[in-house]
Image 1 (cartoon, rainbow, N blue to C red):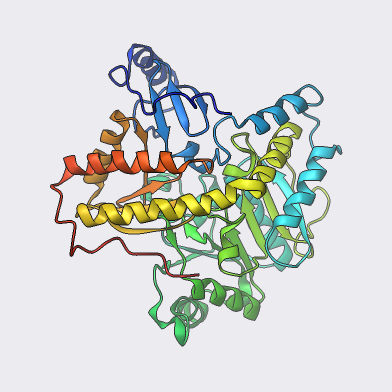
Image 2 (image 1 turned 180 degrees about the vertical axis):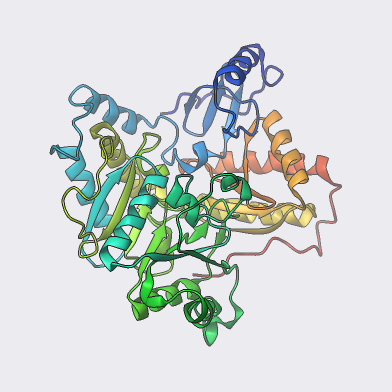
Length: 449
């Protein structure tokens, strides 16, 4: 099924980068924008499943999935076949001004798989940031209000509305003011001990900013990531998301779930909010929706998506080839990959907690499905771990202040998870001495949802 099924992976044969990679690096530095953020000198030639091959023939085990995009695996044969078939029929016609079957088929499918019983409608765009921008416009249009609430630690994208909602790193905002006004940020709850009586998050919003700085009858929406991505892979406590839903209902506010990273099967369910039993008014999706082709979607309650003809559009959004890739992606997720994400996620977190009993550097294991993270003592230690893992053939990324994130394609096998854990064990051994295997605290588990 996969190109590298019979290969030993990882397989590092040259210094990194190798000679072909070094040549590309020089050209990249001459011609490509310096705003990009490559973590290490990886120059990809091809990829299949959970394996990446660079231009010098080195094979890597990929636990990044192109930043949570290739959810079905790199170049899944069924996705490739759908792309090839559609590309011989129609590449582009612009779903803004014309009709074609793949866009309608995908809209129907997304409306069916979206959480909650309320009928849904779908708007297509090209990326997560565009989905956020459109959701902001839609919420303002529908409510006829202007203010929005978002969270510290949030990352929603780099265009102006999305950047204004984000509050993760100064580098995302510094030098780009003025931003979109009337965005109010509140702390994101990593835990909520008082939820048994009254949710501390809802109290913070209702009793503080809604009484001091932000009139609730002027608030169009609350934007929330069910699991903060860039902010460190922190799942919102279950009662807090329920309380947010109630708070929005109380004041006529739209609840917008940013599922750009957490959606499309990554947590073991199609959307992360399904773990919480909450139905948002608007869901923003992208990344894994089309297994690597550029596509984003706003999925909203049908009575919320009431903006008039011509009020919002996208030339390339809902491209027929991307829509066919998305339909193939959803089929694979439903048939096998969401279940695998749940199983392999449990295996991964169990393995990480076991490593945490050996390595003091590794703490606070958390996540849902294959959206998993653990903390390291400092950004410098994390950088050493990521770089050392790269040179040993394991691709990892960071998030938050000091977290390592583990986001392999959802087709990852049990053997590949074990391989990654073994590599990480060796890498951590170079960072700090192993501690006794008994009596040491393991990483914290995610609260039951």
